[in-house]
Image (cartoon, rainbow, N blue to C red):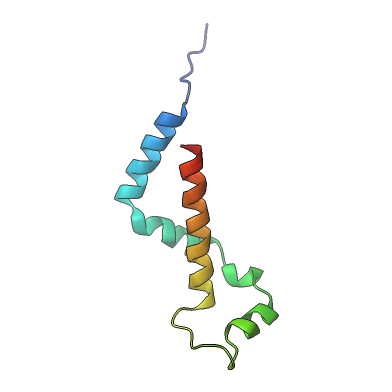
Length: 82
């Protein structure tokens, strides 16, 4: 009995991801916050330098800046693939 399998291609994956992204834009950020604790990967010295009294006042937290940077890299990677 032969097994019929559906072959995936980049077009299908890209279309599915576009649908997911357009319907659930906040979900991706929520998943990132829920399952990846970015503060575990940041050394204390990096915190000290980011929040240094000699530097400028920060409007955004270090974690939010790094999350935005990770998403930027993720989307750029997806654009290269698809």
